Image (cartoon, rainbow, N blue to C red; front, side, top):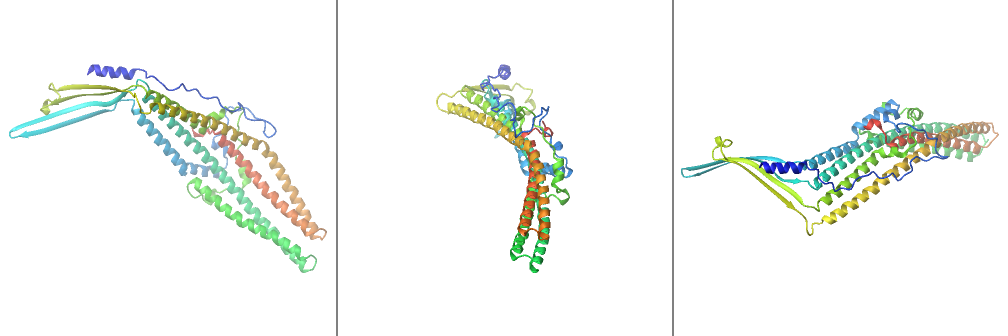
Length: 459
């Protein structure tokens, strides 16, 4: 028995052959730095690109909403449960590297006429423990570990995406609330204009056409109000779904302008290497490492599989002498199996290599997608301030044009059509200004998500 234990210990102590290909992180298939040019603001070197979400969001109401989403969102709960499942699978696979020791105790009682025969036994041992000389079990364990780590990164990506989507939905609700207020304000203004136009028509100063034109602006404003009321309700439904519970009125946004000043700009830095730490990119890399380990397991399966079954125990006809008598016994049964014909070992190896190539392509595509997403967000950031300023000047100019046109119309100097055109231009400019402010906020949130360097998420 000592020899068997010594052989087992020596085999376990040997460094198993690792037949998996040596892993080297592939070179990123993107430029070393983010784009520059007319569409991009000058880039600034920063030690830590990205921001934790608590630094991104300054509005306390929005912070509370995001915290609730992190606690209640069902997609995030499912992602975290997947992490726990992957961790459990890794522990199961890791256990195969050590022998599973079992114990057994038995007793039998036989009586024939006056002859009574009793027997007792106690055994401890392990069955079919694989001595992993060629690294098959080791690589399967490595693959399970990398799959678990990939799932963990997937959960981190889900968390960052949830924060971004919640903040974006909150800003969208704020914008639609402002559009609703603008539509109601426009309705009040157009109703005053319609009342004046009807009075002038009754006095015979203008024709019926002006009345009908004024009526179109009123009905358009009413239609916009109805559509925007629906949109605001749908925005709240979307926010409730992300949060996982109804959001009370006290936590709703007060104005889009407040949010514009409370959402921080996210530094991207100069180097695109930050993308290698993005959760979805890390997830793809762990999957590539798992596929790499699967090749090692498939190669090892083509070599002999050595197993050992061993046991020690005692037996006695009397329970009192079970551990004191001479009934000690041991057994060891090594075995080796090796595929010769069939079994699909070569096909499994080819399949593992193909899966590795797929994982490599997916990893490189994840990096390229990340680069494109950050570049797009940077291009938007580089021009949005100019667009916002121009849009504000457009609103001011449209307001002056409308005021002057209405005064000229009331004085009988100009036609109602010029006043109507100016009014519609002002309305469109105000709507576009709200949309531009929303774009600014959502792009900052987007840049937070696509950089993916939320240090509050554990990195």
